[in-house]
Image (cartoon, rainbow, N blue to C red; front, side, top):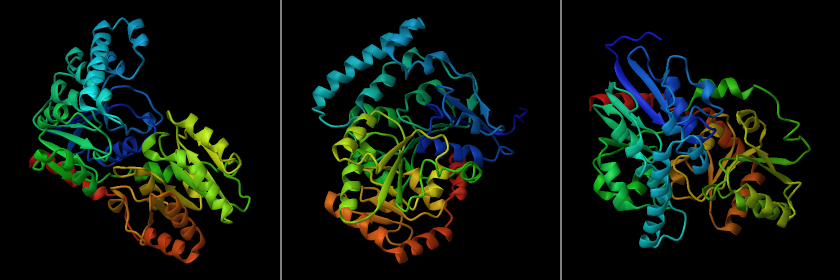
Length: 405
């Protein structure tokens, strides 16, 4: 791929291209960036994931570096690869994280272990390459490597989540964030939540909403039919997509579904995703006797035919940054229901292009039931999504402005 040396150079650093909201948002940037004006390089810690094959040809994919690929694999595998310096860094980080978690008296979900894994291996890592870039983007936290292993005139870090609900080592992370010229939040509420934890960074934080990969989405929607998995049996088909983790709250879906059926609604609730909470979700399905009504479809490389097939899209999350799956459902003109997580109001306009229901169990059930019963409201939501542009392609100019501001 021949490039003019006069083009401004941008490098994006991320983990991989597994199926996930952040990864699809990254694909949106790669799909929309103007390669006539910018030389865009992508460095992935692992050349792995179902979305790898959708990386545009005009994006320069940098070679995988073994040390970075070793960060997300078991330590025993790293020993087999004889990468002993990485092993020492990982073990050091693990021990230090346990000590720090006790010092901070952290009880719930936290980000300390992941941060310390990167923090204590950064000095074991090689430079990405010898080039100097005009802009370096660190797309997923922790953001240590772009800080120290990429040469760039300007550096930007992206934040995708609500920092008020995940405990972090504020003192440690502040040193990491301070080295960036700008921090990008994917919504105004994500920005506001972040600044509650890191108020001193107020002058660095901007908002650039996720840019959707429209070409990929539209081409993928009609790729195949899903009637064998989402059977047309007269039931109301609800769909939720996301990693099987505490944030998504899918462990509550069986009990919500049971309650909806108890009040006379013939619903089936389909779950697309994967992750550590799958065993818990399956256990809850059995406990609530919902095996015929809550169906785990598993990991899907292409979720869009399933969105197209559902009657309503539901995101029952405990917290979100800016949920990409919700935006995708709106693009495909589905009535959307989300729970009232802290950043919910930045996700949609309640009653216009979606509905926000309470987090409380009983009120949540009643809120979902109310939307299911109200066909007129569903038509309004569908019509309004048809009139709104969710692609955010225009936000690319905000990324370009990072080079000049």
